[in-house]
Image 1 (cartoon, one colour):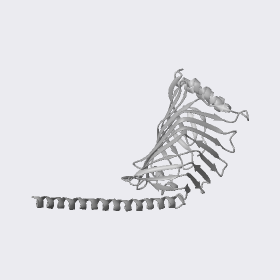
Image 2 (cartoon, rainbow, N blue to C red):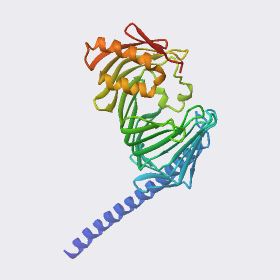
Image 3 (cartoon, rainbow, N blue to C red):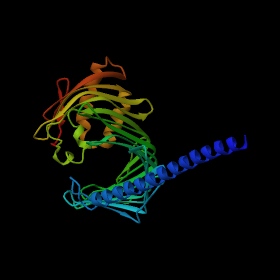
Image 4 (cartoon, rainbow, N blue to C red):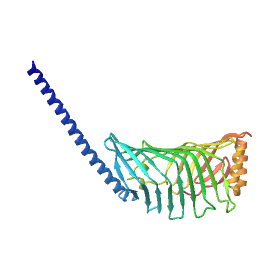
Length: 341
């Protein structure tokens, strides 16, 4: 009986030992594979940031660290800078933290610290800061499949050489979403309770706009390649067609405008479209438009008279806005001409 028990225990011990060896071997193979994959990712990131990418954009990720073993790949940078020499634009950011699960390396969760400073060779400058910027990014074999960004407590200042003063914006919430869908590009964005000021009090031209909330949902036909770094440089805004499913602007106090309809940009940069416009608070919109464009007061009055007729004397209603190669008209009343993009 004792010998039988000893033999059984010996067999069990050998099985346990083999299992332990297999587990240790699996851990060793996995660890080697993880570090090889991490090193490959590191080299790919360095190559991409050094300009070895289809857009020839140069980026730097200061104090790069790669970790996350055993179940994640994690990338940290103390700061990020991006330079597009072709466009003459450079941008700097704060710290970057990105991570992806080992079993889903193409799904990246990342967050970025502010501020962001952008400078253009044309004299354009912007400074943007936020309390939180978080994003989700899903990669495919042909670039980005979809991406979402959520930003909280945004503050931005934009200056341009030809402008009478800086444009300042603050908003507690901003988000955007983009995806490829059957070769098309779907884009949606939302901003809540934005405060916008134009000009400068020192120059005596300060203009404060009413609090603004706005959202847009649009599809650009055949422009899914914009999310592929190899194809994006070949894409052009000219010749683009699309559909504005819904573009809503709310200025409060009952002033709401909703726009929808097809739109196109010609090879010459001129915009065309047949847009349906729903307006709530017509009189309030007229007052706001005159504050923004006092030199267009007469044109605004003519447009409001036409809308009042179309709305049957009501303060709310809808109308068709026609744009033909940049020429804008409301019914039979010409409103002006849009410059080429």
